Image (cartoon, rainbow, N blue to C red):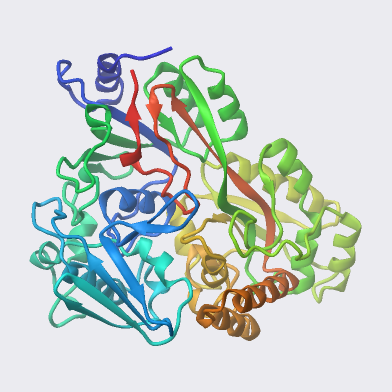
Length: 528
């Protein structure tokens, strides 16, 4: 059933308290659910899926991934690299405006990289040990690397360009004598301003409830769908699945994000006013095992966990339509090794591993933590808990807010034995999984709660990153995936199908194999 724009506006105003909109103008208001609050939308500090979704829409980068994962021009019109992979030069598009009306320059690109490296947050780990110098000449910006970095171009999709003048106009004292805190404190508290040039600007932010983005009329790529484009996006923090289903059925929710249960999407797909879209994502769910905490510091306990997981129940009952995983890199990413060993449920083998452990026969309780509101992850943990109980092993399960989980991940002592999380592609290359999860320099984040810190793994990751020959690099990464699976720092459970429920008048949803880039509002429009 189609919904008239004016009806949606009235419902939103009365039920959600968004205020009164002009019925004559009939703005296209999109409401979207999320089960995780936005910690920041600072372009050099955000990194999880909600923060990344905001940054993708509020900011522009030099390049942008297409549906195949290849990088296309965005703020850059052209680029080239030297044969040794050490110098990349980009021509910055002229005439692009920031949301305050000032023009984007090559100097702003330089500032964004230097700001990322100075703040040491967000996606700065991509470039911290690679970028040696950034220089500007006219409308070109040049990155000089201290060593080759094979996936460098694709990582630049995360270098969101910030308005240098506006950041510095709001700077506070900080580590930099010249730039202070780079405007970081101001951006952490502002609720109506941003420093971007993207298709949408921050309009309002009620932390813990909703964030609102408004269409930027002067966006340099224009608005091909004209008045059918989305005028405002209201992202609502709603953890209760039943509430989301009810709102969607009534037409009060335009799109339900991908973190609800399979049964939720089944039900919403049956509603006459909506449907569910689905595609195999680059996101892989794992039971990430802390290799530095007893008893999971013992490889036999980790292998016990891998043999005790009920993979068939996950694939056929809890998450039907999901993909079987094999190792740390999902098969939708070029460079996945399809020959690495894959565990299956075998409680006899689990018992054999347990009996080889230094902790046997008195295995200490194991703590597993999953995010609040993700019921499917709790169900997976319960299946594992039941299987371990038959072996005499106790698995305690705790559901925590996402912010609490990220805090726990900062040290090996506070990281629980198991973090049930998923990692998606920051860029369409195996390195996005291998480095951020397993390299010793990447520890201390929610992506690397394994605390593997293995010298051989580090060596091979560093080798594949500087290898420019595709065949040689593929061989290194194949070997690396074998070694990681042998160490068993994760129970690789499944590749996530990305499902989203959408009202039937929403068009333009475009899958891209990079985290959160599939929620790019500039693609979308209404057909009513």
